[in-house]
Length: 313
Image (tube, rainbow, N blue to C red):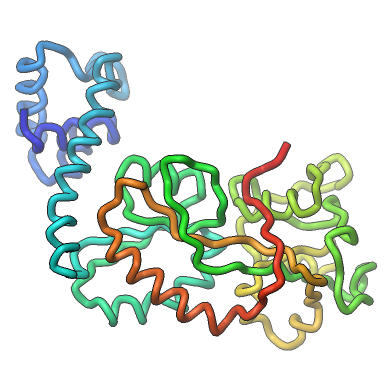
């Protein structure tokens, strides 16, 4: 049994196809198939049910894949141990970022980070919170940037900053006349929200302490774009809530439609999240240092109340 064979098994398990798996690990399909067959013969079990389309894991295969992932991940950490001991900040480093953070935070820190640590090969993936957690647990990404707390016992969370919510309210809306508003002023059925799967939607529902009742509307909106929500508000369809950093690039006319909350301001907590077994802590520390220094100058609010991204039923 070799690490290479286990890598091939993981590639097939994820691709559910021998040809795609071979391309993923940069070998020919016959080579990959032969090595997996040798492993199956050595173990005297079938890892894959090749008669199913797409290829599926057998029951024992599922347990083998789970253990293979642990072994491969641990083998890759040997180099991490050496790098950490030497203080070397380099190599491949993959960051997963949720969509509602990606568009504002990434342009703020990425250029500074890659210039400060030129020996890093940084890869960025935009992922939903659910997919981000899954890829962290499977070892496909090194660290995530997401709204917390998540309540996942397998992951560490290190807070980067607290980002207040701002209300975007058009002139014809009942709340536009107020200089500041309170969560009690909000009607969840009057707020345009992002589509399901965005934790920011759950932030807002939890803030309003209610479920959104689609029966009260004569339209259904599924959008992953704050820009779309803003344009619909401008048409007088409703109001919306935005993360503070997203409001900084609005033009002066649109900024006149923003309303802040009274203290303590409802806010979301944005953190670095990573597996408790992660050994790239020195790189994660470097990333946190860069982001915290930059965001500290952009977000100066102190009196905030954290709204959980985990839905409360």
